[in-house]
Length: 402
Image 1 (cartoon, rainbow, N blue to C red):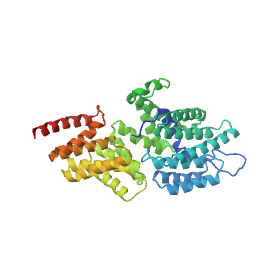
Image 2: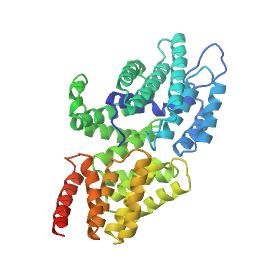
Image 3: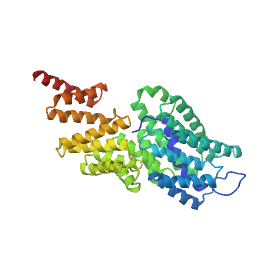
Image 4: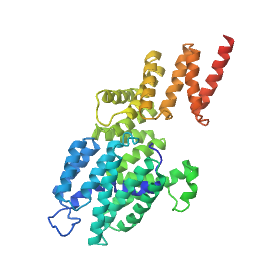
């Protein structure tokens, strides 16, 4: 699960992300008026291909099509919005990557400018309101990633304001249902998992997690514009809710559809591992590491941390090969250092496993260092911390006797 986003950003963000595919609505050569909702089937097909390229991390091909929209429809927000969306997906594998921040904000700012021009022509334009809500939602989400909460809150407030203006068009009800589903799930989930935010939640209506999941499942099967975005979130929700069978089914299906998308690939590996399907997990983990080695776009330290830990676990607990297990666990820690995820679950579990390996080999001093590294993190409520504390005590007793 990526770091927490204030739920009202989630509400508007994914409700409008796949709205880029609404390029099918825009056509005509009228220089005086920015036209809407023409449902040009040819444009729809062309742009859907570009959207699919984006989800499959074929960004060059996708961006080329999106830039064409800038040329053909220079006054419309669609081109800049899709280019910003594409830049967002470039950091989905590792949202700590800040190299695209200025480009995302730049495209979203231009999206807002052009959508406001549409509102100047037609104050009741729901399409323009949707684009403004979407752009502010992306800006808010990115600010939240960077923990700039003041700017994030302001952007979220603007997004909500324009989202309300965009409601009421029955032709895009699945997209509205998607937003409601995200709201229902995350507002309740945050209430359960982040006690410090409870005062904020009192200003919003109560959510219903199970209803939210059902709504998102409906969208993932029946919507056109937000179907893939619903699946993107459902994979993560199933994992959080320990519905690993559903997570694996959906992630593996999406991996088959978009084999070059490292996000779905990683979740297929994670879900099979959580279910104890080690042969399947090993295959996915090897693929993750091989893709990193080959320099494949979208595959980096985050995928490496997952893949290396799984391989280490398999070699330690199933193949009974401590040397190879040590190699992979150390590789996991190396990947963690590359993207500052030393405190993440697989990273800390690698430290514990390395300590256990050294302890089994009676390298007590080395083992003690690994356990102490866990204790230094001071996450006293975690099972890993408690296990390391017990092991460290045991080592101290053994060292005193020696």
